[in-house]
Image 1: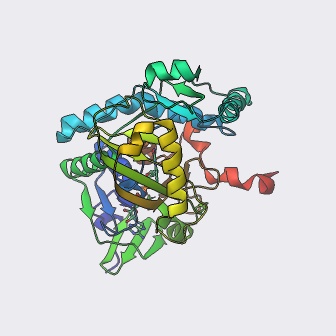
Image 2 (image 1 turned 90 degrees about the vertical axis):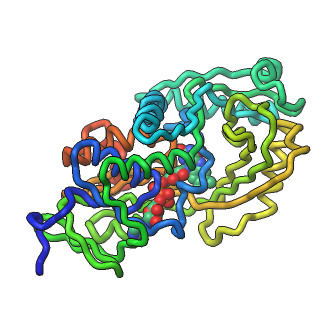
Amino acid sequence: MTLNRQHSEHDAVVVGGGLMGASLAWGLARKGLRVCVLDEGDIALRASRANFALIWVQGKGLGFPEYTAWTKAASAAWPRLASELEVETGIDVSLDQPGGFTLCLSDRELQANVDALERLHNQPHAVSHPYEILDHSQTKALLPAIGPDVSGSIYCPLDGHVNSLRLFRALHAALKIQGVDYRADHAVGEIKPQADGFLVKGSWGEIFTPKLVLAAGLGNARLAPMVGLEAPLKPSRGQIIVTEKASPFLHYPVVTIRQTDEGGVMIGDSEEATSASLATDHGISSVMADRAIRMFPLLGDLNVVRTWSALRVMTLDGCPVYERSEAHPGAFMAMAHSGVTLAPQHAYNLATAIAAGSIPDDILAFGIRRFHVPARA
Ligand SMILES: Cc1cc2nc3c(=O)[nH]c(=O)nc-3n(C[C@H](O)[C@H](O)[C@H](O)COP(=O)(O)OP(=O)(O)OC[C@H]3O[C@@H](n4cnc5c(N)ncnc54)[C@H](O)[C@@H]3O)c2cc1C
């Protein structure tokens, strides 16, 4: 039997059930669409289970001012997302947005960070974000546990963090409540565009959908060409160290150190241009630990309880990619390295655009055409 639009049980199929796919599927379902999520399941490589959980605005958007605006709006929308998820699922994602710090261990490092922020704020069409440059004693007034090696810091009041595993759980609980048909162990092997939609296939069978959203993280690289798209990704591995629980001492997230709502301290996250292996690299983790102890000497007394490394969904310029296929206009693709930070934008604005079937101007800037500048010139 040939399946077609009349026989489709779903208005949209989302491929991938990580933070991106779950945020989008929830948003689409809230717009009234009947949504199915096809996911590899818990054995998959998932950045969503391994991230640092920051909601971070500071420094985002150098060379891409639209990204600064998009990220600022995400930070502002986070209280709404946290509260709606809690009302719907009863799960508190421990949102905390007191502002965040970049700590610097030399005057040179501080100056390099200040220069980068100035470049961001001086670029054409710049979108500003608030920040303060603090010396050692001003930093110590807010972060009393810093060590003498901290020469200063940059503080941005828009930054924060969440419990990202609970965010992931809350989104999946919300999918169930919204009636989303979530199918684990449903890896998609092939997508066949049809006149009125897509035939999506795997070893589990096939399903027809008029609207398709590729939100498969690194898996988008293989799937995108099947619907006339490309996924410009580059390798990027990150490592994280987690300590035993400690009494609260760190009341603000630092870009590489944060104390979770449960008391453990996360130290991370490195950026390594490889995806060759997920083994942790002790050389890198010892540099991370050494810098962390110089920033907060009391960390030297805490035991490490876990370390891991994970692959980021890193695009060529580090900024999100949202695209609609010109060849097959029912197909959309979304991928972003900052899937925690941007979760409200994905659940609300991007899902609304995909539900409507068109991408508005503020989202168009995130398309893949930006990687084709020489070809367009
Ligand atoms: C070390 C590290 C630290 C990070 N820190 C932060 C941070 O502090 N703040 C922040 O905002 N972001 C952070 N991130 C990024 C954030 O985790 C990601 O942006 C986000 O998790 C991406 O979610 P995703 O759903 O696109 O990808 P993933 O979580 O990788 O999920 C992709 C999903 O697609 C599924 N899939 C793949 N191929 C197929 C297929 N063929 N068929 C069906 N399903 C498929 C997989 O099974 C998986 O479930 C960090 C990431 C890393 C690795």
